[in-house]
Image (cartoon, rainbow, N blue to C red; front, side, top):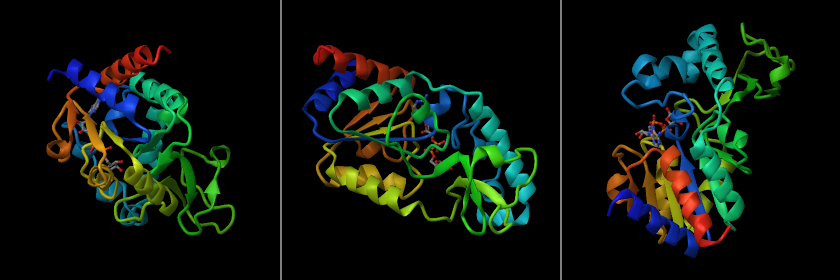
Length: 250
Ligand code: APR
């Protein structure tokens, strides 16, 4: 089957589905100019995740970690959603039960109009106290230097999940329940290497869902999926949306 045949097959599945869960990764934001992590020029090929995305890294050198995140925030603030984000937002609006779970922290799904986005790894544009977890609004944050907590004077850090940290309990539980209930699961733009997010398509598959992967490359999940669309998400998702709208005469 070529990619267009696969697109039509996926649309057939969406037409018959009651519960769809989409899990997205950094690949969905790649076409917005935001680096992925594990592609050949990805962030982890240039920076050390342990030095920059861990509690130990922040404790060892909070200035370095803070300025690296502000470097990423600046790129994100100057980025816009791409066609893949917009297609996912519209699919969510027109399908009766379409849930969006993301590993991304860039907020581009929300900028594209997606609602109730389940952010498994937090949000880079939200900050909290390293000690007492109090959230600090963007307006009180000085991006050029370290900030102290208004409540306990602890250091402010990005509200993202660092390596070795637990995911937000409510979000991962909801994502696992949605995966369990799905009859179609879309894994889009993720290398499927980081758990527990990488377990979600397997939970769905074990409970009878058809699993679709949208990724131009092979991943650890590729051997387990039912349909693999080897296209960029900014190409595949608009094609899926367009065909779906044609079939429901929207
Ligand atoms: N469309 C679809 N997929 C793409 C595109 C694109 N335009 N460009 C790249 N990809 C794919 C790559 O082939 C790769 O499989 O996106 C995937 C990105 O993988 P990673 O860089 O590992 O990103 P992700 O899977 O989101 O990483 C998960 O790891 O470092 C942590 O917290 C970080 O949330 C992140 C988690």
